[in-house]
Image (tube, rainbow, N blue to C red; front, top):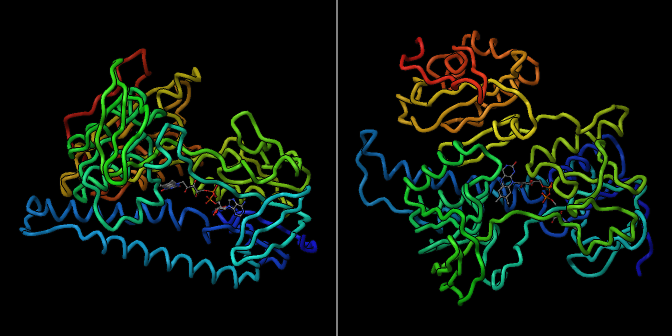
Length: 476
Ligand SMILES: Cc1cc2nc3c(=O)[nH]c(=O)nc-3n(C[C@H](O)[C@H](O)[C@H](O)COP(=O)(O)OP(=O)(O)OC[C@H]3O[C@@H](n4cnc5c(N)ncnc54)[C@H](O)[C@@H]3O)c2cc1C
């Protein structure tokens, strides 16, 4: 075994939290070493968020071009060139990696390419990418691990692609079957349908997006089916057989089995924490009942001087949550006092139109016994949508039954991610909903819809009729 090197700050995994920890500690003059086995900068810029949104945007352009006649421009002979879609995505990823390397070098932090495994408390052996090993012991250790997994369905691991392989396709699948009706599966289903593939989603549950309100899930299903995606709900995947390019997926729905043929299969059935096989037990780092690293609300693990951040720590599975994990830990290392308790973590699903939510939805409020009033508005009533043709969807806000605090906001509509951020700002500042109602918002913007959404007093959910969209237009 190699001689042990002492490191002031040892970071395992260069995901969103790990890399920021490395850069900030480095910039502050601390000695920090990051060990990364595969993706410089983590999965977000390499295989997850940015590459998927890059291809999703290409698909949106394809969709707009195909529908250009509706906007007064005739286009003939348009077709998607997948090698060019792929080349555009790869160029972005390469630029991202170069930018990350520049940041490492500017921060003076060492990036070690290799796979780390604990051999003792706060000590890892690194199998270096280019051969050989290093033994690194950290005074402080930060864990930022995480990866998608392919669930154990017979035959699936040999047949299925994950997002990694899908985002490297240079030919369109004839028939892409997406297993799982969650965020990842839905985004890819719409994009690949728009590129020109036949697409089927197989979802075990009764609705897409298990955590969203049924009206939201239904609206999303409707969008997908309107664009020609087959959505199979209440359908369990039993096994996958076949050979490359000719897969046969056996599913069960309504008590009977049938086969779905596919040229490509995408496994998008959720992600598990990457906490196996890294020797956490040797290091005295305990897991919780779900297999995540057990942390307190300051992201401290059971081992003194070891922190965990991002997906491996059970944080919400978003890049912005991992980034905030870094901020919590870093603040506490530098004299602050921050915790993960009570933080608002929004999300945006990058379908077209987008689905965004911040705070509670009706399902969650009911589950937690929180009395709410609800305001809703169809996107047709937002004047901006008349100019762009993006009339699909709605906004829905939950207001506390006893105060005017906004408890949650869901929007399925164009620019939903941006509009939700405005509501989040109000929620963070504890502004009553009336301030969004009365604020002068530029006309005609999507955000202007917030004036209209809150124009009538929101109504108590379950006990009174929900506020119904008014026929009149917003005042211009
Ligand atoms: C297809 C897809 C699209 C997504 N889109 C979005 C989106 O639009 N917005 C959003 O907010 N979130 C999105 N997510 C989720 C998001 O990518 C993650 O939540 C985010 O990257 C945070 O991950 P992390 O920092 O916990 O870990 P990661 O970014 O996965 O970083 C962990 C790193 O640790 C390394 N590693 C693991 N084990 C070891 C080891 N033993 N030794 C050395 N290195 C190791 C890994 O190689 C990896 O680079 C998406 C996810 C998927 C699958």
